Length: 265
Image 1 (cartoon, rainbow, N blue to C red):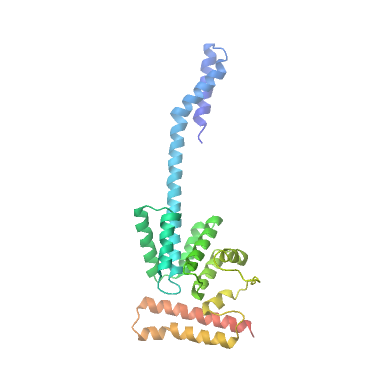
Image 2 (image 1 turned 90 degrees about the horizontal axis):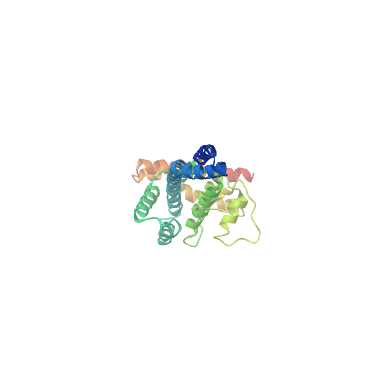
């Protein structure tokens, strides 16, 4: 709140009334001056500051919503084509949680579709969000919660979805304890809490579990490697962007398998 006008006008009023010789002139002068100072000076400045802060808040809120619908779209598409439950969740976010207008809804849907159809990796979207909101820890944790809500909207957690969630947790600097607390709001907690391991993201990439034998993991690795081999996509006449994405995925699969094999030697 602006108070400079009140103080300066109050002092001027105190001096003026005191010179006129009014009883308690200084006190009444300060009161009258402060009132006039607020009305003619501070009030306008307060209104200007308030409008500026409101515009900044709306702009910040718009930036957050852009990241929400972009990242949630990427998670929704991770396991398969987007299903009805994931679309219903998006509508609930628009209408109930964020209370967007019709124009806001159209914008949110456009952002969702652009991110869903984009070949830009999930990690790039996540890094841009964290760059913009890293200092707002509550907002970062809220985003992680929304990503879990998207993954859980169809009642299950697909390995590809968990792969993205683990990668997001790494980018957002979210500990395994925090990760599990959010996860257990959407999925039943196991009796014994798993300890965090740097290999967790690699197991998630292969859709494997730490307790599985290396032979089982190898079979899963081979299946994924065949699916994402860029030569196969090139032979099918896939686009340049699709082949580039396949190469990145193929490299991630190979790296994950190598890390797991090395850890078991």
